Structures are given as C-alpha cells and as structure tokens.
Length: 384
Image (tube, rainbow, N blue to C red):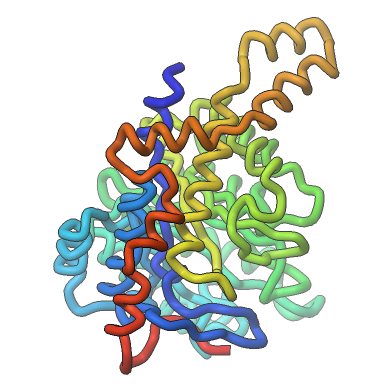
C-alpha cells in the first residue's frame, strides 16, 4: 500500500456547528469572531481545509443553517474551495418533540417530524449532498410511559418514508446513542438497533458510529469491523469522551482507541473511497478556540490513520497464525508508538502546505480579522 497516496486521498468532514458558540446544559461561553450565519461558517471551515489540505467538505445542520437559497450557499462553498457534505436533521429542539418526534404517540407530531426529514432531502437535492444524517433523541424516562414496541413500529414507518424519498446516489446514515436526553429507553440506543433497521430497508440505509455514544468499556473497533464486513458502516461522528457524550476533540481522551478504530478501518478497506465511509467530526468545542480546535481534530485523525497504515499486515498475520499473542500485540504497538508527525509534515510540504497547520493558522491573522469584522448581529450557536 502506498501510504502517502492513501493519506493524500483522505477526507475529513467538519461540522458547521463546531464554528458557532456551544457548551453544556449549564452554560455556553461566547467567543470573539464567531460566525453569524452559514456563509461565515463556511468561510471558517475553508480555513481548516486551507491549512490541513484534507477537510474539503462541511456538514450542515437544519434549521441551524437554514437559508433562503441553498443552491447559492453551495456555490458560495465552492468559491471558498470547499463543498457541502452531509445534511443533518434536527427533530429534538422543538416543543412538540417533548415526548418524541417520529416515535411520538401523536400522529400530528410524527407528521411534522417526517415533514422536516423530507425537507432535508430537498436540501440535499439543492446542495448536491448525497448523505442525510438522522439522529433521534426519542425515548422515554419512565417505565410504562409509552409502548416500547409501538415506538419501534413508528420509527420503522418514518425511516421507510425517508428511504423511499431518497434519490439516485443518495443515502441516509442512522445514528445511535445509548442515552440522553431519554434515560429509561432510547429508541435507537445502540448499533444493533440501527443495523437492524438499516438491513431491513436496503443499501441506501447505513449506520453512523459516533465515538462518544457508547457505554464505558464498549469495544468500538469491534462494531466498526462488523459493520464494515457487512457493508453497513456509513461513516463516523468523531469526538472523544472520558465519561459519556462529552463531545471533546477526537483523540484527546484516548488516542490509542482512535488508532485501534482506524486500524480496523484500514483492515476492512474502509479508506477506499468506493466504500463510501464518511469521516466526519462532531464536537462541541466548549472552551477551545473554534478553528484551531477543528484543525487539531483533523490532525489527530490523520495521525491515527498514518499509524494504522504502518501496521505490518504480514508480520501480524504470521503472529496470529502461530498463536503468538505478545508478538501480534507488539506489531500493533510498534505502529502506534511510531512518531508519524515528520511523515505528515513532509506530506503537507509536498502538497504546498505549511508543515505545521496550527502554527501557520496562528500566524495568518485570520482570527484577528474576523474578531474585528464580526461585531454586532447574532452569533451562531445555541443557548443554555
């Protein structure tokens, strides 16, 4: 395998919402220079791509990124050197969704939620996006609150309607989350539930793995290996956590886990663009600066990928055949313990980029520029 060629072809999608103000349930800390509309978000995302060279797509979140003319927004992105990635739906911030959206017992609420999902497919058509991301906060807090089986029936009905609406070359990715905001049952709590629904629907339905959405100790790389083997791994929402859905920068809490995940991606052929696996970031950036936080996250994924590509498959297979437990583990550890930063710095220079994206951005003056220009108006983000 040509490691440099593989790394050059790698794409990591950044989320528009990462450039706005964000926080926890307790507090959102506003920052200087934060975008006030989707156009300014795209401008910031273009900076991440300019300094890393591997972040050419930006995911949108509707209605956070709602505009009058999505075709024009897409043209604006192209003018900046980036493109529109996945369209993310939002059926969790409306008062009507207090007891659920597509699984709500009220048919009127379900119709409203489905209407939004279909609107997101319309936006895919207008922007040229080929991916719809679905996450449902639906669930219950108390035993007996609702019929668990009936909620699965309602979910299946909604997913089937969205699947039917998808056009040629379009797909949806179904996201799962163990808990929060529902605490007794979550309607899509794990990869098995998401997988079962996607298998029933067909090839345009795949599973997305958010690395923060699992119980402590869950072997995420096993999930990745299984879904890749079945052709049902649609992509990742990369972030990092210590306790639950912390939404910290990917690779910050457990870089070894990120390496193990990327090794299974390499082993399963997931870096081949033909597989369609999307490598997306989904992080809040509560306290760190927005653009540098995205640059560092992209670099963390890139470094984990480079280390995974250094695993010697022949030596590993030989040790596994011989039952050499320590030898097999050593092959992985040798790759993980390799400093790949010089390799990646050299690769960037070959691409005409600065070897250190963080330092290059800091020297660019872009932050000082937007801090001075973006005064007044409503900063993008969500309140707490």
